[in-house]
Length: 92
Image 1 (cartoon, rainbow, N blue to C red):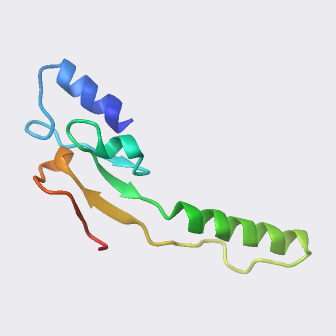
Image 2: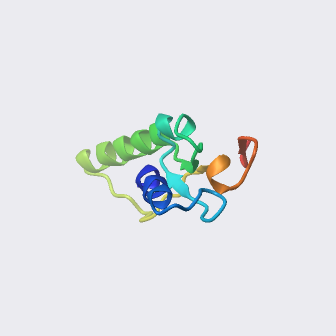
């Protein structure tokens, strides 16, 4: 969606990030290659899958799950699409 947004903004004769800043979600590989490089949130995909698998296995074994919400730490990766000249991570 962020890549499409940048394209639409540019098609309207505007610039990213000069006129509009753009941020994406999921930190797809193309986000660091696309011009401008897209600011994004990187989710802990492996940990999400591991947690989901463990919860499913617990339920399959007849167990119960007390918590209804699990929060895993994500990472904001700041790149050019928000006006940054250097790529940086807030959780590094």
